[in-house]
Length: 230
Length: 80
Image 1 (tube, chains in turn cyan, purple):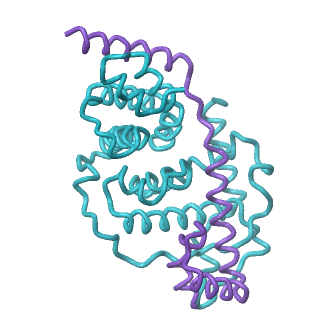
Image 2 (cartoon, helix red, strand yellow):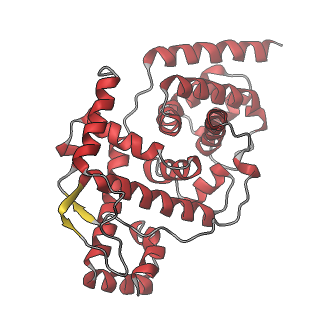
């Protein structure tokens, strides 16, 4: 099997088969990543196509300073960001954002309770998917990007920073905020109310904003019904 | 170590990238603080859950279309 470098060299000479092999090696991973970022299959398909077309156009300029996978991820992530920004009515690109570490205190965990059982065994797959999707969609885009790249796709802190053109320190802060926010949201659903820690000076406790798990589940179930079981 | 400080070290601990000296202080705090134990544990479960449930398959019809479009663009690029 040819190495990535060999395939790149051949593709740069005009060999489509070599380029196609590179696409095949990365397309499934990129698709999974982009779907998680934009959460709409049709948007994900457009983004993936644009990203590979961009890669095709600019392959000659790719100097292998990063791996081909990181380079592609960077292109696809930027395309995904454009779509997200269009949706949100923003125009700024991440490279233009300040690279200083985000200010503000890290939010303290509010709802602290062991989870009842393994959610993957407790809920049917579709319901679990809706719960996870809704929680991650509520994160700010910049936090969701970091969480998906680092924790789901397994990029290192440095690689994530490289892909997003931000500093590793910034990746760490966003990652911590994302992890805490997701933990908080999922605990409102999966947390065992009977084993919940009450408020102490150091820890949160009975927050009035916390909705009962049963009501949340009803809400998720209703969403599935609305989608007509799709 | 206080709960507040533990929060700041949480990422490094969960990722196994914590300094050994700090790790000892972290773990001795955890032994005496059940809420912090639960937070660490549920953070880990959160990450695992997202990782395990990330199963999105590239649709076959899209893949076929993608490769066709790439092939066409490639021809345009190299024949000019």
